[in-house]
Length: 400
Image (cartoon, rainbow, N blue to C red; front, top):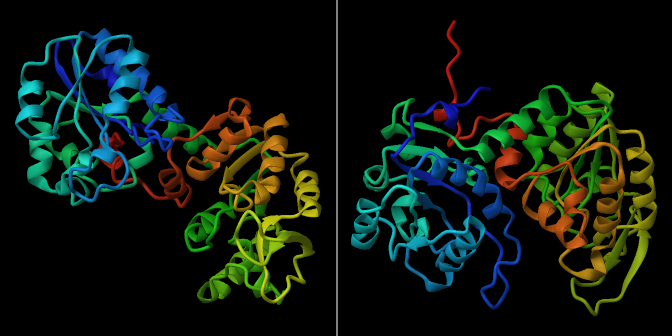
């Protein structure tokens, strides 16, 4: 898939609207705890500034549901961008209101303006045509560098693209890198190729699993989603999370894996507890014998050893979803041990954004991974074989 390239645009001295993904985690004091997404956008911003452009940056943050909410202001993000760019960043007080429009109209070459949180306007998530027009009116060029939200048909991601022709829009460096990386990973991986798939529910990963089966050599299942497979196999899973309506789908995935010769790994033991809390009594039990009122909350030590053995010879690893409820230290050991093992391997290691990116950062092995995606949901949809709504308008049509 070839995308419209920013380097082919005649940007010199023009105004450029860059859709970024600055939806970064913050602590309880309003400090940014991980600025990876901001740092990832800097290359595209600097490229435009080097072309003597006036740059308008736009992003969402959190879910303010179409209303102004100080808690979701991008002011802390503006400070971090200013620090990374080493130049002043003008902060608009609104998105398409008087202040933003006035500041955008007088923005000079080499200056940077950050609009307030796009989701303060209901028109953003509704992909409202009028809202798209107001955003588009601020600039001569549109660049999408927000991979993490490109699976959403929102005004600043999809709607706005229809207001610029192919000579006035393109993918930023981050978006292009993500799309190319996942494209190569799915179409021509170095084998053996393994996928580690975790998280709480099968429903969120079902299509990705089905699409991955013909492409991978091994699949390792962890997290809450494992219990739907284990229940279908006739195991007693106690009070563990399960999706009863997806038992047949789980069987279909296992049958398909067998048919294709894909080695399909499920936990052989789990850390179980009577309740999900830091003071709960927990114990290691086999996957077949989880007590009736107990729930599995992490993979056990035998599963960690089994998965390590299975991953020993692989050359490419794709990891999407933690192995347990890693947010609580008591149930984070399985995910942590797998993270260390994957980081230490000589394989190409790809982390599919979201919770898994947060996990490897907490464990401190993020720098050891080959590639960490900035988008969990977006990377998942790529694995499902979908073309993302924010990417489709930037794809170069191949002439027959």
